[in-house]
Image (cartoon, rainbow, N blue to C red):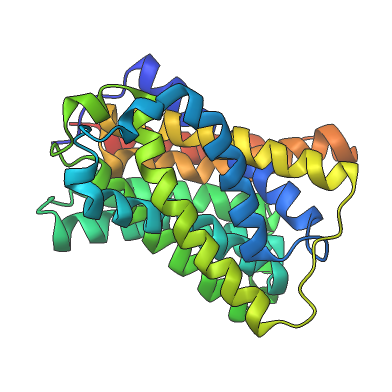
Length: 300
């Protein structure tokens, strides 16, 4: 039986889609300026620099972190090392429309992972919520014209988005395991630092491989590039992970995953704000469908 959605949970789970939409815009803008694996490494180095003075005590010799280092290494691999790295890699070869559309499959992977590996039952309401929520995403992607679906073509980059969605599903379910010591889990910065530290090591390995395999890999530094890296290292990294962890704990990962489908809607709003594309009636229809999916999936 899914937990009830509270106003606090709604607020927490709405922040990540807003920042994910902004992260996609920034990530697309940095294509050709920063290699994708390197961008992921730089973003988490920024996050690490912010978290260290806030949660440094988790790294003390007597900290229970060291006794559970394998767990945090896995969380760091899934949520830090792989998730955004795959998305940045996808933006190199796939269109933003396809990336957003394929990313809307997260609720499906979340339910599948919960059922197969975590003993969670899939309810009829959750399945109906998936259909409603994805329908809302399709309305945004096609701008209300269903014939536009015929023009969509999946490319190699879309596979990276699927891998990112699967990583996020397992990461979210792993977060709900009540095995963390209170000294780690009890302080948000310590808990996030426990994941980011091994995640940076994973990201460093991936970036090293990137530079070894690509002779043309280079970072073209400028003030806009530096500002963009600071933004994705603080907003979509620290703030998003903090809000997602708390929100998913309140509602459960399956229900929380439906909020991810708000991302393309916020992307459309950002287009209206920065590109002059004013909201259209289909935006309202998409919002209604996505929110309906969230509400239906969480009903007891």
